[in-house]
Length: 466
Image 1 (cartoon, rainbow, N blue to C red):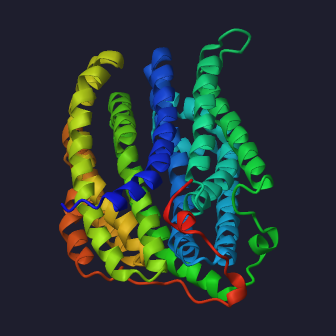
Image 2: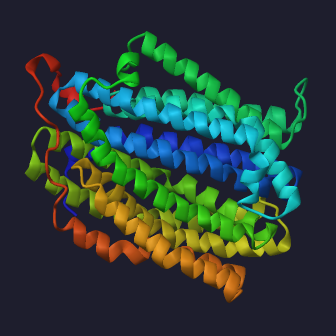
């Protein structure tokens, strides 16, 4: 692998705050699991299943932010600030709308939502209480995540990382205070974990508003949020977002089906799977950060019409993602004994967890490669449809049906079902790499705008993140 010191220094600068933000977000789930695990295994399992609602919501706003990344990165790269602001307004419109819908659903019908994931009455009751308390967080998350997305593009990744990290630290502290009732705080158990999340999102929202007021990031144009002035830009936004949106829902729906399948195999399977997923998410933070950073860097290159440079950089990033995946897998194997020592589950759940950690170790290798290509390289040049079809077919035609058959028709052991549900990343690697080698993603999609829409940027502003 040819090492371009300047390129990887740029990647490091972009990726570090993004990966740290992914890591701190995963730490919230880890703290929930660890603290609730001290109370009872059912509380841990209920939060794991209820947390799937936040995951599904993240698929919606994640698609909107992916669309923002595709367009805003290229417009910012060419110096068109006005178009970048309008892309933010469009993104915010849909992110807040969906956040409002999720907030209403979690507040009004939490028990019915939980019934989709499990038929265990204690888990339904506990999960419904959690959802009802945490419901307001979805609307707030829609706002802050859209702003974090534009901050990463417009040279303010460190600012978004600082805000997000402080919110996570507050969340973890409030978790301890409200779950266990430390000092004058009431002991709220599972509802305390939910309330801690809401309060952290309130803090996050206030901090973002302060940053906007101090002009540390792009302003939100409310007029553009309500109605787009540039119909062509709005059309382009949906042109690239719809495939990403379908991809997100298709992939996320498949992953959610994993939880549905495991949720009907007993509380031991749910508890073990939740811990293994949390550890995998913690270690995968760097992989996901690299995917986001790759998309931003390549998008900027393509926006400046540096096609050959982007093509070479893309190849280097793909090879690098394999190395990161292997290292991440080894880290998971190394921490497995530590996790088994400190996480106390029922004997059967402990047995499941041991082998699910091994599965997570090899799964993350394929995940690192595929996320870099599908979520980073391809969207940087507007190639968003391939990932959609690849994930939909892999999950809904192959892995989910096989998992369902294994669990409910063949009634195979839990670990056999879990193994089948980790095959998706490796099933699609040959097709993903073959499409990558066609280089259909190597193109500039940013349209020329009148000169009044442009502004001068220094080389530092376009090539680094502050």
